[in-house]
Length: 234
Image (cartoon, rainbow, N blue to C red; front, side):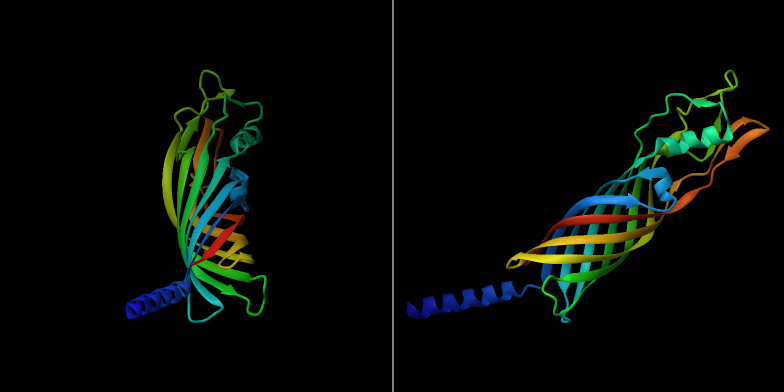
């Protein structure tokens, strides 16, 4: 009986030791995003979040990562109305107050480099992967006509579409891990995100042969995220 109990204790200790050395960590963070560049002309800030699975390599300062993120944005309605007022003085847009949104889902692989011999745990990250951008809605490519019966009026109904587009992207970040209790800490991070997705079509606003303008196709989204959450070392 004593031999059996001793064997059970040995197995338990061995399994506990193996579990304590599991090379995986799990993190979850939420915060906000800030569009930059031409992307900020078209979309407003929104909610940002991500979950991350880390794998500790034999190098103590290096972890590999798999990240799935979420970033929501809201269309700036005055981006379109300003185009009209600039190019067609006096022309109005009828009831243009849509609640268009864009949602970016990045799926990224990368690396996390931790500074050695620093108790608070500062680190730097680099990631590459695919961004799945869902647009609900955006203007379709083509021509939007000013009403022939009322040349001072534009009706945008029927000229929009919902679309999902994918693009390659990368991210560079920095953060700070603050230990709370053994194996659990607070994780605070800033990240620059870039992707090649197209988020606005080229379209023509047509009033007559002498009064029309064509917008540029807009692509390459970029934004900064600020997030905080927890990290658990398994």
